[in-house]
Length: 416
Ligand SMILES: C[S@@+](CC[C@H](N)C(=O)[O-])C[C@H]1O[C@@H](n2cnc3c(N)ncnc32)[C@H](O)[C@@H]1O
Image (cartoon, rainbow, N blue to C red):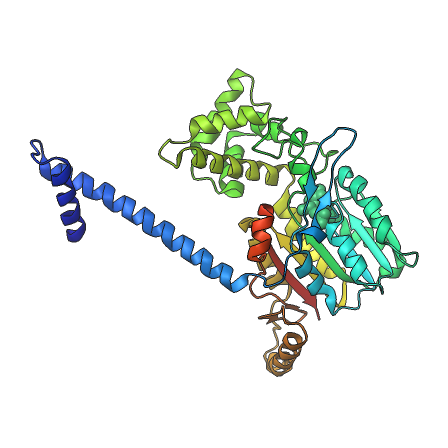
């Protein structure tokens, strides 16, 4: 404090060589604001350094080939140009490379970017199941799947939520012993984000919809215009981790008196007007908008509860040695994947059994890592192994070429 005070006193003297009023008080104020700024800068630098360190630990060293990955979605009827780039395809292929994959389930089919790569890489495949709640995804995926599926593969694509995975698989007799591989690539596809009519993007005007499943009844507009005040606040706070949630909640509820919010630009105007100018200017309110949109999307699609329940269901559906790979895109999702995996494999209660397990498991760890260099550290449990103690994140090259990949984290669990 003494040092800071000294530094700011000299600053005060430079700025105002003849202070007339309350110089000590002014010096104190300046020293406080300088100290706050210094603290903020230090915090920002520390956070950046921590992130860089974490990325060094988790970053994939896989070569990224954009030309192999880009899925062209250009529509000649509407003359719209867009593309979807599946995230960490090479890393997902690595996860299943040593598995004899006779059955594979893609819970989030999207444009079938991952699925087509997995199918191509596994000629032993006999059963393929692709799930997605969005019929647009199915329309794009189906011809792409048809092009790679050989006659020997029994393939089923279903327009269903992945929370129903157990039910869907129970309908297929041949899969009653479990499947060898399951993939969940969470988040939105480019087809969804780039279509303004879906209401997912902060960059284009559209209705406040945000439904992954266009047949579902709840839209973002319903939450904003009719949910109780406290629930609106909870969504912003818990799902957006938005510190300014109280102000936003009040403004959203007040907007109801003027007919409510009906388009993404109505919401963006409200956020722009509610963000303190001090908080990073344009960057500040755009970041707030991104958090608010994330919060609403999570609530509309009940994403977190669905994810947690579905992770348990997917694990139950695995055959022995089967693997479940999950790509998440924000910290709330990743936390659920990490904690649910830990809870799934939770340690063996019997101490004696645990001791004998330990040496077996050490051997297994060494064997696994030797065979599969992408596996760095594992966590063993009584009924499964987490193959990614730390998640895998995209290579620097992939991050540069596909900005949407930058927050992706891949975690993998294997059944005993
Ligand atoms: C990131 S995209 C998947 C892209 C895909 N892996 C590819 O390579 O093209 C996520 C997809 O999951 C779908 N989805 C999201 N939540 C879902 C749920 N609960 N059940 C089924 N599909 C879901 C979305 O509709 C979207 O098409």
